[in-house]
Length: 150
Image (cartoon, rainbow, N blue to C red; front, side, top):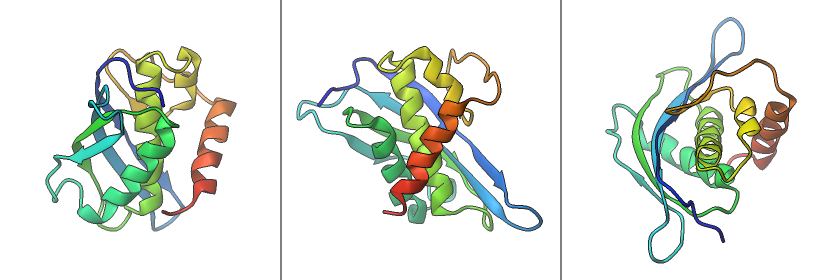
């Protein structure tokens, strides 16, 4: 298993999907990524207060991060987040978690810079603006949806 080679801090993803009329998805986790500890395993620690990121969404965020890291080990610290009382669902947090992790891989140069174009919901320090529609986004989002709930 490869480990994240450098720290990448302040990565966030905001998932806002309007399903039309009433309802939709909303999720917003923010995380710092560090190289893995001495055991070389992925570790995810939450420092976000319950009012900013309820515990009920943590399993979905973790599942998304693990999916997005795609076998790369990292120490992950959830540092902030937000949610909506009506519109936050597990699928939104799983999607956001996966985008945050993929962004960490791009920012750490473990993925090609062009892959950033597929991460339309993610932001991180030094990121260039999202250019618009990209077919790689559909492929990544399709993998997240096929993974289903954990």
